[in-house]
Image (cartoon, rainbow, N blue to C red; front, side):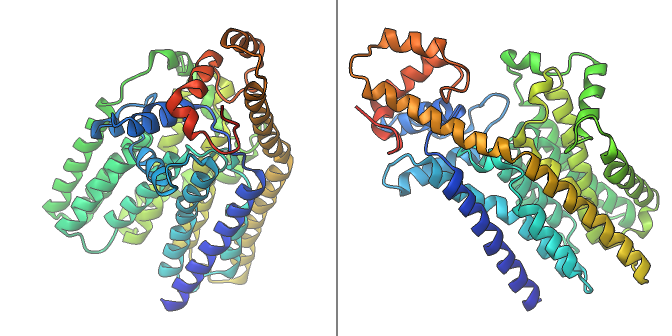
Length: 440
């Protein structure tokens, strides 16, 4: 166990160091998108003006209630001497990102006595590639990391050999926290409910049935509390055909119009899941952990297909790749924990399978590196444009609005350009703008 812990800690330090270097070299200290209103206007401004209330942390942001992100960002702001540093926020939230693969690796080492060093190398390569760069280089995206991490820990605790009352309470809290990041976090409670129902079927212990009902009620209430945003209705799938087309596109990721991923990932995945669900009596308790993650991912993908199926341009946004990528990694952990590799032929075939995925994602990262660079270039341009407004002494608010309205969408770091001007000229927000932005 000691060696496994050392390997996990070393792994965490290594991948965080690489994420840190990416942030150092490609992050730009300019707030982007939702940071201007949800972070500056509705969090820092009321805090500074002593108008921030506890219930404000639970208020809805679009369809979500980003409680954990608000708490984290405000805490960073306070500990940073009341300075708004979005790059510092990126570095802190990257810690949560790195905890996810580290925990999965630790679980793999714990339950696989004959663990493969090639699998560890696979972990290192997959999670150090700059695949989910949008969340990494945006200081307001920790909600994705929180939701994934809290969900995985919930599944781990629910599949542990001994379930105590304290553990149940902790699981309920984790499921709540999962929901208090992304609206689809309600799925976590539903999955944990099915874990306990499965344990009830296997053991016939009534306490598992009670836990299952309790978690299902919790997840149902979370779903009911999601308030649709009228302005986002056009993003949703308008009919069943839209939903199927959207799901088809998602299941091809990271490719486009090339269904090789159906053959490489989803057909084997569904086959393995179906086989184990049918033969549920043979499933070991720690394997339910991987099954839960995979089913959770599949439902999340269904949710994205529905919620973003009406606008194909927003469907495969880079911010979702942290969830997409988890499906590939979880698939391998599931295979390795269930199959008996009793000969070199099977081992070599399995390693070849992993190697194919390494090549796919290395190629994906190489092809998409131009977008990765463009993010940096675009934000540098945004920073330059904002500073230009401050440097130009002769410009007045009306002239600035004309300039903003004539600009392209990504010339400024907020899509509604008149509101951006309002934000940066607000007396309270103006004083806390990142040091990279010239203030009056």
